[in-house]
Image (cartoon, rainbow, N blue to C red):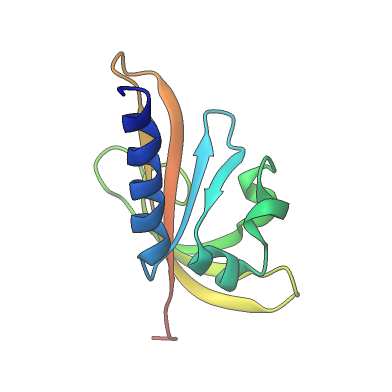
Length: 123
């Protein structure tokens, strides 16, 4: 019976992440994509299946224009927030704000990251 709990929890978490309006991308410790929600697929033009296992920089081609530090880390894909331009798969570009955080295990070792992106209008 205990074997079913992790699978149920994973399905529950996936449902939550799919329902979020922000584009959410999760990577492993080698910056390879392990998850993209539907909003991320729509924003980038990449399907989750096509993006899975690719380097995050290949799928999230972002030119940062305005990093805003959070704590000791700042900038895109390092922990913090930033504004920039996302180059989509079809060649179009979108002004975005991204927020990222590092995932660590119980011993502090980096095991991945989560990146949330939303489209912003020109300011």
